[in-house]
Image (tube, rainbow, N blue to C red):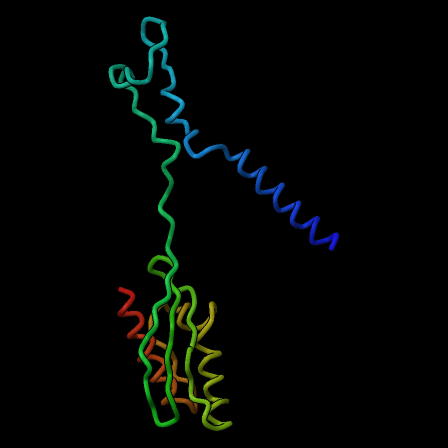
Amino acid sequence: MRRALLAITGLAAGTTALVVLKGSPGASQAAQGPPAVASPSGGVTPSADRATLGAKPRASATTAAPRATTRRVTGPVVENEYGNVQVQIVLSGTRIVDAVALELPQETAQSDRRSDQVDGRYSGTSGQVVQRQSADLDTVSGATATSESYRRSLQAAIDRAR
């Protein structure tokens, strides 16, 4: 009980400190007014006269670079004689960062083993899909039908992502 109380108090204090240190949303440099610039006569003029002095205007301090969006795209279910295969890819911007087999044949112990081999080679953040950024994958020996179905679902997901 004491730990829970301390954790909640710490969370509240941390959140409050973050809000106070960050400042209010309207307190950007642009809202504070333009900075002053020395004029050729030695006086100080507002930055609105910068253009007449030949100085370039500064970029706004609130302008940020666009963030890459993460999204999931799912390929269709592709049937083969051993079962169904369906693949989903995770993209950051236009780059594939993960691949997941949502469905693989699991009918028999042998198809389960081969599906595990296909999944292990292709899927994940370090699988062939992420490494190659395409559906051009090596066929898993002994799992040709499952490999081909994986590639077809993957290619459809890549096409949908474009």
